Amino acid sequence: MAILSFRVSNYALNINMTGQQRYTGRDNFTGIPAEYAPHVKAYAAKNYYVDDIDRAFANGWLTAEEHQDTLDLKTESDPQFRPSTLNE
Image (cartoon, rainbow, N blue to C red):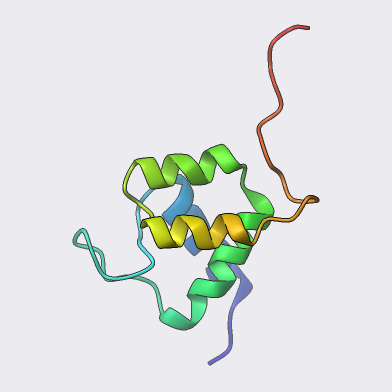
């Protein structure tokens, strides 16, 4: 099955930012196709801040394993922490 990039980004948004989907079937969600999970985690690691991923975990949208898998994929060039908005 071909992995479609628009689905990867939509799944990542819906899982990590809005909680409208889950990686696996739980919480009355059917889960995304299993073959998309590694791509969605990589997308989230590359495009979302650590606090976004942490919030998804805190809200129960990610399991501990999904949370750690995503954080493990982060590199130094990926967004880490949201820049401070305080006047310095």
